[in-house]
Length: 367
Image 1 (tube, rainbow, N blue to C red):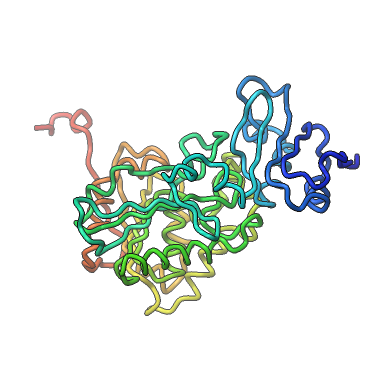
Image 2: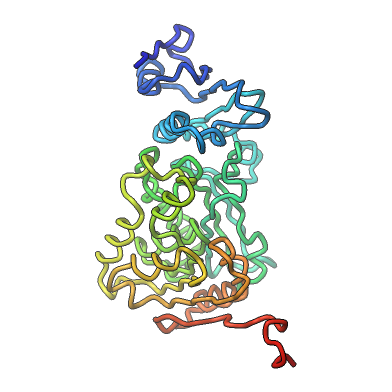
């Protein structure tokens, strides 16, 4: 195994560049020991092909996957790829580099969490809050920071009751997203997310019961987890409660292996089993037995949580796979968010919804 020799120019540096071929195992630990203030790491890979970043290459090459996971585990995340160089920024430096933070479009707090807060529409005083957790980006391997801040349901606020503010939080911690949970790169992420929510609740003059956590897919995982953790109301859309499916069938495209202390199946099973019945907040989960996440959604949660969740199983025939659940259940999502915000009780248990067919499939029975 080759050794990694740190060039003299890199010792004590803030911004460094290395060729991919030079990055032997342990290179990053060695670099950070000699340069603890490092904030930008640039990796040259000129033979990768036009427009290809290390994220693209990592999906096919285990050695390159090791490099990007190792960087994420030290809180370095891809922010640009240009001219055969993929650049990583340290989490602590994001606010100084990300233009949307610098121009005030996004905010950043003292713990490094990037977020946006939309005051209630029409000038109403805040009486409620919806917290939106992002799904994986549509461009999951995109070499830019918005990969960590997908703007799901961008028009959501206009469908919510008057007086509803909307908090959106960016999701760092893993290579393409941290599920808003603790990772090797951000081991205090859960505590920081909880603190941000409670800080906004206090600033707006609200109570915990005025808050609804919402998210699709990865964001649904976060909404459910942080709802159980903090006692907030939850509307989760087809949440991912175990890593198995993406590891086995999608080449670990979410980069969870080696980046998180435990599998989500263990996290959700353990947290749900640790709660008493009185600690379980109102929870609604939109799912579909047409999605590969359905078996996990119906088995991973333990008692008493499992028996207290209102499940809505959409059998919309246009749902072909997991991402379709969010898109094809928007009307149900709006209804459940409104019910949660108005504090309307939901009956626990599994309900079948959207069991409809196209006219052409009904033949002679069509009107």
